[in-house]
Length: 320
Length: 275
Image (cartoon, rainbow over all chains, first blue to last red; front, top):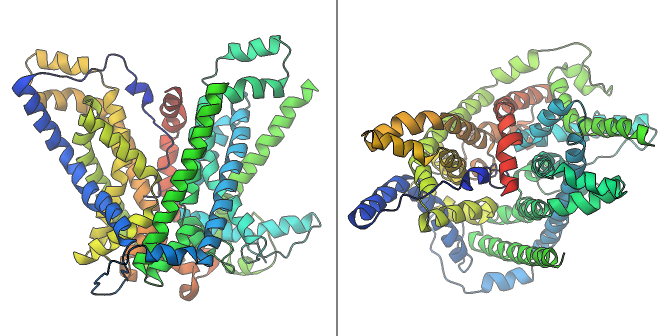
């Protein structure tokens, strides 16, 4: 499901309770307990095994076949043919590049914008309640509605964005989502809008954990606001920043619905995210096996990138 | 210099409020404008006069009402299924240590980051084999399955927060296990069940991708798919009713999230961050 977007572990507080012991008993009791446990877990396990673990394994297997979306499929094992073909598919690699630009920019802008808002909300301003509710709205709304809403904002003729630019005396005839040069930046802004609240909430929770004494001590030492931010706030938030940027990056790279509704990958493939490309290959061109190979390549690359990123983070954490 | 900090902060906050709130305001405003005003080149946030007929038009469109009904049906049934099957499992996840828990938590994490595109291809083939593509039953099963991991995660947290001592005290008084669960655990778990149910409902109500792939006939469309069809190609619908339909589609999600807002911004996530 594309929606489970709550960050991290909402219950770590509970999980850390020291008094929580597993009721371990011995002998026949233990066996009865285990049988009971399995019986209780089964109703959850079964659908997950049948409808998500099995498809996942099959998905990888399909990548080595020539499966097509036809009525009576009879697949042939074709080895690494799909992957060899993929290496030459410049459209796929274009979409991969666009996906990277999209995921990196959205993730970074989300982080910067969310950091600003979290700092503001943490500094005791009024309007906090209003801002928090507002900040949650993009997160809650159906992606389709978000896309429709932003299509209206970006509308070339009667859209408020062009009207605003016109009022400032700037060019006011830009067709944001249809122009080759503005389409990708325009969808990136929407991506930031959607994902920023969640990052804000997480950062805000992190800010509230930093003991005031740290800031006070730094202020006593004569550190200005910026210095306190870089020397106290950022290092304290570091573990949170690492985990939300990794998660946001993966979610953004894997995103589909928003951009599919906004532009369907156009104009001229300028916003063709990899998931859109793979979806079209599977369900429009009907090449299931080939599309599965694309899926496998995307997973492998994302996992690799993430591993590199996390490693560098842990290394510099050790150093500091 | 120092005196300027506060005003500067308020200016920054105003920009955020504008950025976050304006698109929604514009959508609501468009839903209240007459078609004449929408098609004219005058651009203003406040409608010249308020027109409610976009809403009645949206509601009188056969496709929209039917798909809203479908969405509600799928979301309610999958939410009930999620709660019923996640409840016992979350109890085990919370109370047992060891491999079951580790495997459960591991899968929950993997399922959050895996690209559904790799799963949807075989899932589509599996469901087609048993005749459940283009079927609300199939979609309900899929929504149930894909909401489950996170629902389990939420719920096991609420179970963990109930001290084991309470249960042990109960069983020492000679109450049976079921009685302990029913009289002690359940009542304490109710807020957790409600929060999980709201999350589950919103996930299903908002869901687009599975519905797009699995549903083919318009009478089976869920609300997000119908709205998408209105803007794409053939079904070109007037802007006003489209905006009205979008507002209606967003209401349940926004209401539920606003209710959960305190929980989301308060204890739950700060707990996450301390860990």
